[in-house]
Image 1 (cartoon, each protein chain N blue to C red):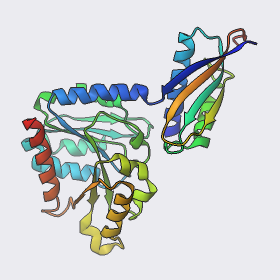
Image 2: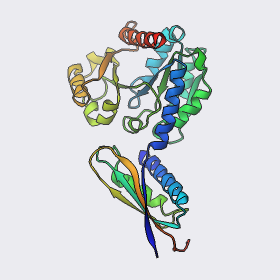
Image 3: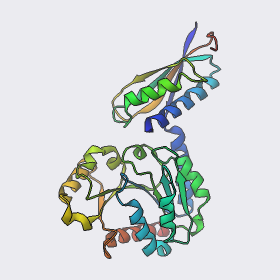
Length: 86
Length: 223
């Protein structure tokens, strides 16, 4: 459940940042989850895959990096400005 | 397909932490000392607060925000011991309180009449460690009916806490629990942790705890 709350916040940030950048379809959401962050990776990945399959993302994929420390942030987005909306 | 990369570098907790800064400022401006009480379910948070409210509620101007996944049973229990509003936050499945919920709960609380605020978090030793609520300090409870190695199993919570309450000491004769080992394990993950040894059922089981709360409120009033 904690991971779902984290995943929802990641999606909120991704949607907000993609909107600000005037981006088309989000292809990839790059996330850094430190090994001391207290977040369970497989659970977070599961939540993100589910959420990124739904609108407004539809077919985006999470890419999770695992640096040392307690960092927990959205590091980058890959967006396709030509891509069809569906 | 033209793919471009947008640099984001936004912390997942940034929004919560921004709201927590607002809560902290609001409480500081009102001269309120605030503690975020965290533990596993059943460690005795609510009973500790019941006794504390009954004995010191008026003297120290104590208000409480409770968080539970479902029901407002804890708030109902606490409300019997105070004429102040006990504000219940029902998280509807979420495993922790966040700063937004606490900010909304504070709107209902009379901060003018409050000098000490307890936020009783959802019973959970994992997730609440990640959410800053704007409190002055986290206080982690664990009881002698739990394993001595709780601090080793849940290190982040014990690292985040400034104070620890070891509860249910009245049950010590009946359980195989070494206080010494529990303290050693806790200090291994957080050498600065300050301990209180309590029993909410014994008449004099909370004296040290009460002394601490009085000194915290006095210090804030003098500041």
